[in-house]
Length: 271
Image (cartoon, rainbow, N blue to C red; front, side):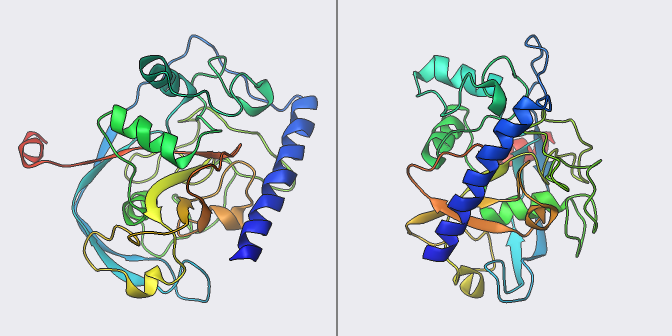
């Protein structure tokens, strides 16, 4: 466990250096401050699927999971969306807010918010009348209906279809929706930023996971983040990738989130 934490810290520090290099070489991606993408939610139908893959890593063993239908945000939560939350609740400012090299702040309204902790993501979700997705919900949504594929769009990494690091190329965050959606109509389920989910982390949980609507361990020192971000290589952006983070204080330059919501009986009929 200690080695995993040290490795993640090293990766983050290296990424920090690369961001400053990228900002000096003109690779940042400033957007129109007047732009404001509107958040939508996509209904994900109830399903049974195989979560994880077999092997000796934290995302094994492969196991069957059955999920009720749920809604999930079409896009990662943006700087503009999070700013509305801050204004309404006097929440603390994200760690890198106002820093151009991190595409953070209202000069980059449609870039995903970064520099927040797991608890702050949860508070935003509650304020918005939503919640964080479970790990099982997130992975099924990321697959977009594909079976046995590594990425949200297929089985081979493609920089035309997702924002991740390739041969030293790093764009920083890009505006949400810049790349094609997956089969469920969701954007950036591969790349752009890693995403918080609601679950505590345990390496043993997959071997003992409940079949129906798993919620993760009841307690723990760490939470789970899914996917890989703009600074991650293709290997780390596979849809089954998972990594631990400290649950209370960790704030990172490439971690954001999207929200989910339960489907209630009265809204099912409306669909």
